[in-house]
Image 1 (cartoon, rainbow, N blue to C red):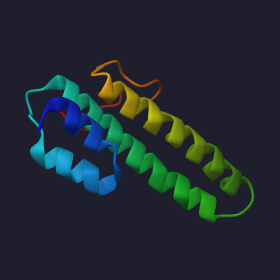
Image 2: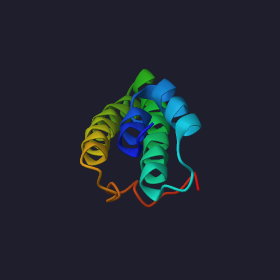
Image 3: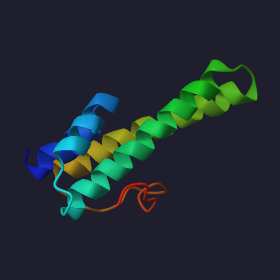
Image 4: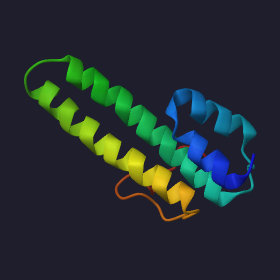
Length: 98
């Protein structure tokens, strides 16, 4: 896959992330950054879903997290489509994959 395609696919749910992870060029920093950011977004969505399932303050926190995750998801896809390696705010500098 082309780096741009791999970066975009990484944001498309867990399945897209797995496909991108398997097909990625490990030497391409652009692809690695987007795969890493997509992983963080996916993990944050799981946590937000858990919070949202609870009532009270945790439910509200989950809803706020859902909105933030959605915004980061859109920003990630747009930056991948523009072939920008600029990190996302807040989560862009967190590295889980090297």
